Length: 327
Ligand SMILES: O=C(O)CCC(=O)C(=O)O
Ligand SMILES: [Fe+2]
Image (cartoon, rainbow, N blue to C red; front, side):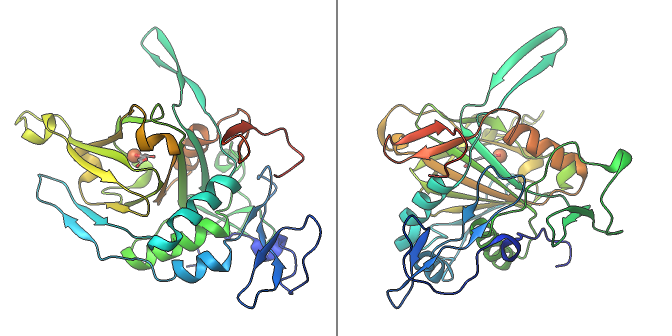
């Protein structure tokens, strides 16, 4: 476990002593009815601190997975575990509301060049990311250090992005997922699909920096959305290339994609008109990146260089965060 990123919660958090309710203080109920200031995860790379999950959620999250997994491996090269659900029913909504309210999100834009043609891409969903690949860890002061030498990576080994530790509220789910699956994860990617117009097009998460046959755990909270899977094109033209498999992912569900799923299949969340999708959906994927290239890639495409967005409960939408107040 020495190579896991640290969350620095004890370093930056207020003391855990119980106090009476303070005006404007960040409070959460405890079992005996008293309130205590929420503990916070913070780091110089965060625009604002992220509270720990309240005990009403953690007490029940500890019972996850709520159901045993169904194995889906009856199509060529496909290997999935499908937990319906993984997150217990009582906390699906509170956990969705908490994560949507407390995270900072981004709307990443970038250009791709195919031959002479440059195309502007506007990512059709909100994203955010936390984690650090296997070559480095966070020390107790929150600095990135080389996993082997304990020194800050420098020269050609230095990071050009600013890696962020996984906040405790997500790290608890990461640890549970490691226990359930026996796999290790050092990255958490978060997508927020605000409406049916938000989507992710067909792709596979088969980058070299994840190593061969990566194992990826993918959680749904909030609105149900269809998850489509199709086999990549082959000379044999499998029926699974033209007839995608559809999993209607509901709040609390988790799909573990493993084996040859990434190398041989693609997946997507297509756009949908109206209905439940308008209520918003959070997707969390836990992954394990092996090289610095993975860290650079994940921050480029999930944080980018644009502004911060934060959920505005009054307006019921993500709004550009002005800085200063942490809502
Ligand atoms: O939202 C989902 O369920 C899928 C997200 C996904 O495929 C990705 O982030 O790579
Ligand atoms: Fe994906």
